[in-house]
Image (cartoon, rainbow, N blue to C red):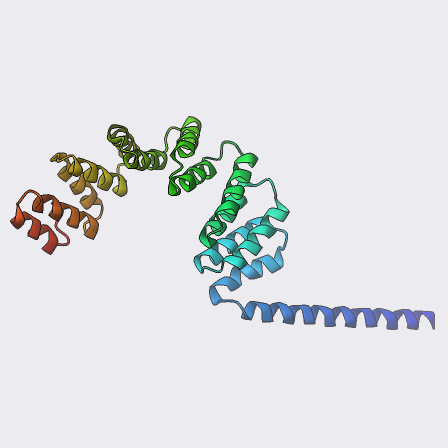
Length: 252
């Protein structure tokens, strides 16, 4: 009799467990079906491995691309909850806050990333860039220098500093840093464009060389073709100006 009761109880437990698993599976499937198609695979991975912070980070990045910032923030906060020492998660969090227009929260997230890893040049440069946007050049320069002290092979850092120097009127330093940027990154389109603009403003024919370097990197660049056309127009060479406006793929 006791064996029969034990067997019956065991059967009931199996039935209840099976029903519970079936209900959970059904709920999970409903959840997955409610998501955009391209979000279902990563979400299934999260259901299978819910304590993996990298999966939450990956999905947060996908939400950012969809401009679903609240969902992105929820996922990156989960990643941080599982691994609070990882600076990369705070960098993603700063990107979300920046996209949401929450500047102070963005700053705080970047400072936390730097606190977790003082050699984290990505966070340092993002923090410098944030100050550049608000024309806080003194602070920006400090953080640019800090990044370059860690690793002086950093064309983006030289480019950013050059842009700030150009804005405050230190043309010589801007040129020096832009040259450093293209030296380290020969296909740095934006750096060649800015060199062209600076030399164009100085009425220096070297501007054309830099514009042409940029045009070789992007033969369909409307920006560079326009700059070259204006270069010639400002020098009363209207025929050459019209050529560059009318031939979008002309490299010179």
